[in-house]
Length: 162
Image 1: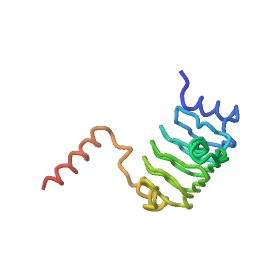
Image 2: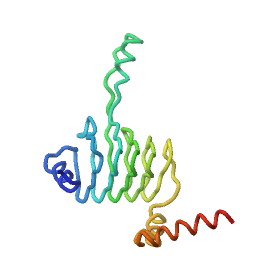
Image 3: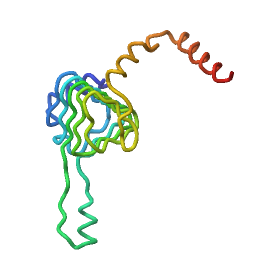
């Protein structure tokens, strides 16, 4: 069975993407149809089911409707240093993300993401800063035991009932 480290090493060794820097974790099981139009810098996490859309095929329909000469449309995507992309997000072509940016799960990124921002939604909009996210994560309870996490979970639910 291929684990994520082996898969990422394979992607880098075989130059699947235009560029793949150091410490890039690419978790999606599907490779984008035009991976050579994607540039990953360093220290990037791309979680499961993220879709990179580097092209469309609208020209096929337009050429039939308008009897025109529309051509295939493709655009690059660049992901700068220290970027986290949440699961089930979609990144459209022509977009540059980061550095120091977080894309929340389920977001649709239609335009550039400025440095040090957290974006969410469809279309993705700024909801905070990367620095605030890091600070909040440092103060979080993610390293608690399962039992302690359930206690905290139940406490929150009990507070809501009051």
